[in-house]
Image (cartoon, rainbow, N blue to C red):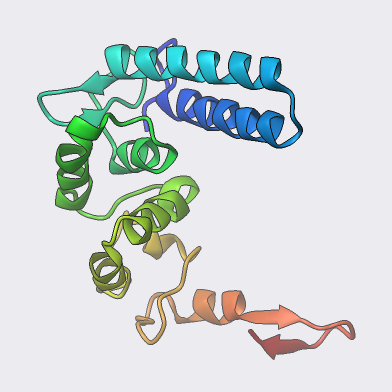
Amino acid sequence: MEHSGQYLTVENLLFYDTLVKSANIAKILNHPEEEKQYRESAAKLKTAINKHLYDNILNAYRDCSKSGLKHQGVSALALQVGVVPESERNGVMTFVKSQRFGSSVVLAYNLFEMLYDNDEGAFAYNWSTAKICRAGDTWSSGDIPRPGKAGPDCSARLTSIRSRPTWDGSSSAA
């Protein structure tokens, strides 16, 4: 992802999500003024994100302000946290699914959770069980193993990820 712009989309999406969750906590704790302030701030930020960081031609969120790059993980996170207007959701989902899987390790969890939460579990599963050792994708980093798909280049990393040290220093299968 590009980080050269003044406003980073992922950081703003995470801040939006934090504001919404803070409002929910304030509601549970019966603090209506704080809830109102958090919701108003979240609404303003949502509007700004969609005005300045969304490309309505490609139905994708820019990596940062003034960026021409639009990574799928950024748009997936926008869907996950609820920033995408209802009228744009199908277009953004189409953009995310049309990209070759290449989300960063940081956003891979959000990408897959968003797909499962939006009834795209079969698509997510098929994506996650595809050929494992493509140069440059998240899986080739060895951070997230796929069951039964270890290639000759990845087997050692998968073994080390799947075994955990026990209290006595030996290892056991995860």
